[in-house]
Amino acid sequence: MKDQNKTKAQLIAELEEARRCVAELEQYEAERKELVLRRQLWDALIANTPDLVYFKDKDHGLIMASQTYADAVGVDQEDLIGKTAAELWPHEAGEIMADERRVLAGEPIIQEERKATNAAGETRSYLLTKIPIYYDGEIIGFFATDKDITERVRVDEKLKASEKRLTTTFNSLQTGVVIIDAETHKIVDVNPSAVELIGVPKEEITQHICHKFICPAEAGKCPITDLEQVVEKSERVLINAAGEEIPILKTATTIVLDGKEHIIESITNITARKQAEEALKDEEEKYRKIFNQFQDLYYRTDKDGIIEELSPSVKPLSGYSREELIGERVDKIYAKPHERMRFMKSLMETGQVQGYELLLLKKNGEETITSVNSQVILSKEGDVQGIEGTIRDITECVQAEERYRALFENTVNGIALHNIVTDENG
Image (cartoon, rainbow, N blue to C red):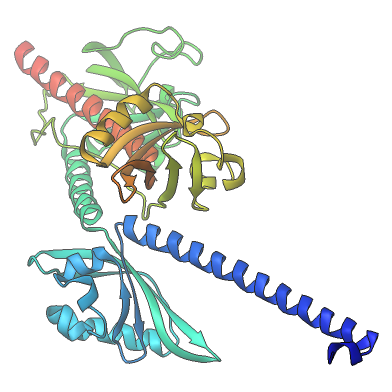
């Protein structure tokens, strides 16, 4: 009866208030679901990333850390909360605490290299990124990722040592080596033995046409690029700066450097019969380039291969946006769709794969060589629900390895063969 005494305006106002409350509840529920989804995606990403990911408060205590971090320090994930560097990284605690003080003072650390000793006693190399977290204008802690770059550092050190040995050998060889741009026929580089044969300083040789120094052929009649002759252990004539003709044993081969075709000529003065000062090892890898960092792609598909989720890094890796691929079959980005059967067989046999090489197809038709880490998603009952994992683009690494292996093998093998033939003919 009380409601009967209310005016129409009061009833309408109460109805509007009720509608507003319902709308707020619906909005709250939508926001709650979105937060849950984001947390699930975050947890999945943390579970699959190879990096050490963690949060710390302003007192340097851990708030949250990935399983990879727990594995590195040898502590159960749930026991990490509140622990500091002094407890987890005793050998490097001083340096780590100094870095953390920088970040908590407002200075981000972006991709700085550090070394640390893990729980197994191994000294590993890490690429650090630490970002301060602000709340109401004050720093309350920081977020950090430590990327394990130990293997990359080892490869880089080996590459630098190899480059140094190759440069030393290149400059020490008593056989002259000349690198020529196949299109312009300009000399790009020469070693000291070639400089001595030609008879003028290196700077007066490089960027000049090869006909001027090492070959009597006229322009347009290059034995290699124009006449398509095979020049291998062939007796030729070199014209030095004084105009003298010097008999040489020459081998020329073409290779691709930095996307351009070049000619590598090895020239041995067969009147002096000079020998190379060092013997080279064929099997050693040379000039292998490694990216300073890899951008991994997180993906998830259902059990039928329909793409359900992708990280934003899908764009640089494939050329597709997330929206273009979500809902599509994963076969769409396989360069060879039949390879998926082989991949799935390996995955199903063990439940996970690490470093599995797949050839993917970009939106523009280019093929990309990738390394895949994946695992099967199972229901509580043990049924396969889907697949999730990370994909890393290793195309440039593979191409660089092939390119520089070709450079090393072609150059060194040619020089070694010349010297052997020279000795036998001598």
